[in-house]
Image (cartoon, one colour):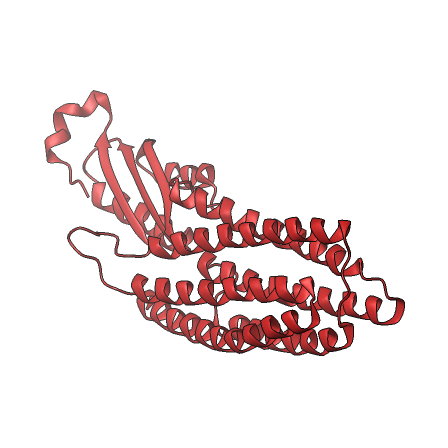
Length: 302
């Protein structure tokens, strides 16, 4: 049942990414050409961000496809981790683009340039509409909440939407007040927002790649739950980590009193780990207390 749900969710994620990539590609060309014609940094920076978005969306789509491949003798967990690698690449790309925008904005703050604000507003409005459609496609089709790869792609689209909003605001200020310094100022504001989102994605991706414990699961509570099983004396070597978003792995040793009820203890422990804490992979080994080591050979290990 869980495998069927995961397959269906993966298919929805892929559909959402494909729709968003198609929409973003079209608007990328429009904003880049518009930025050149109007001499708007806000539009050019937004189109540059969109270029990274198209690349990131396609990378996320490829990662999603690759993660669906079955495990192999050399990749016993399958290819799930590539989704996290894709999320990390997306986060770093966002970071670099935001920094480049800030550098260019600084130059324009020193020497503000004339911008064709009327056309800039029209193009930015079209861009905003496209960003909204892409965001809706990802929200409706994709698992934005629990899938880090999808969330990084969604942040790219939201960053684009903010860029479009910023370009519209800057265009209005320049059109009515000839305040051309608004163009680089708005660009910096948008870049700072992008930096925050990128920082979170990079931090979460690095945490998973460093075999960090799932952020939404408390190891202390799991230990208490397992220690509450009758016959369990103690727990050692408890390890838990994330393979990819929503796919967690768990291992531990349970110190028990005797072998008599070992299968019952193992069944209860496995049920707690998988059903109560939603671990996808679970390996539990049973051990006797040191005083009963002579009975060790009669115990089942799993």
